Length: 440
Image 1 (cartoon, rainbow, N blue to C red):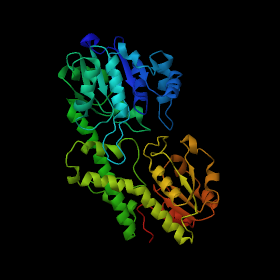
Image 2 (tube, helix red, strand yellow):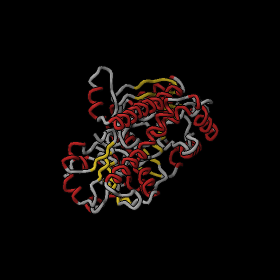
Image 3 (cartoon, rainbow, N blue to C red):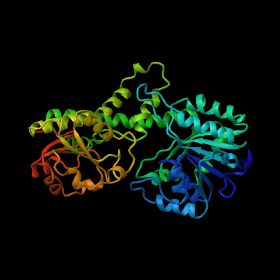
């Protein structure tokens, strides 16, 4: 099949990456850095412009990515476009677009995926390999991607093109590290596709490349994130149990994890990001009787509830201070979903802030990595009745909290990420309310 039949050689094979977000941008840079001619495709013209100038569009701490992008563009190995017609000479096309779920039905919304696959189908060449890196619900490759590609291209899978599902395993803050070092599951349409995909990814991946069928790859990726969601939900529910009993979740967690084969996760103010809040729903979306499932949906509901739990803690603290929630001035520290990142997708802070505003709270927000909220921290907390920490940014973990809290009008401190701790809060004479920490 075309140039791929001779092997995946960097000087012969032309690559495209469709979708230049938190996955596509580092993927494009990595393959360009090892010698491939890479074309990045995105509908966001500002992102296209930045990358074409060697500027990293991803904020936060991403070790090595800015230098890698600058080098790849500078050497002429990575260029960008919004024109899908330029895919006509590409041998390998990777797709890394968003795959959200509907807020009400919790079913997949494949607007971006269908658009990308359809446009690729119209311009792909015979003999190419199409790789879906986006996380998708089980059976999506067979029911959505494959028929759409064949219909738009007029080609037949395994005769005129190969189809692969190699879902990413990345996390903001560790994008390059995870892409290089994590094992990858490689779902393929045929044995030949598996051989090509393995050879292609081996240029940048040091971990194992486990080849399997398309469906298994879909289930593996969605299930691994659903599993983590369940683990976090247990930690969050245990934290609420500990608080109600007057125990300290963080001490309980420490001692539990000394027992062999125990790994209680951290509790916190909620679960965000593009993957975990939706992948549980993707995993079970094809099932006809989702209502029969208990653990996975319940875990989702627990983790979605945590920002509202923080609101309850805040109201309790203000009440002890003789202050109503309505009309209170509250400083919220942290808007992204992950420490030291600018990624705000499904951030628990968004839910918290919307709820507080609906209750008549004067909300001030600070986040050192989110452009909209990079204001002076002192101005955000000054004269606030309460401060709520939602993200454990390094900037917050190293603060002189005495200086910060002395600027406040009130003494209420709600700790959603165990940044301060009860002992330090007592030293500062604060009304301390925290996830997983009792008042005793």
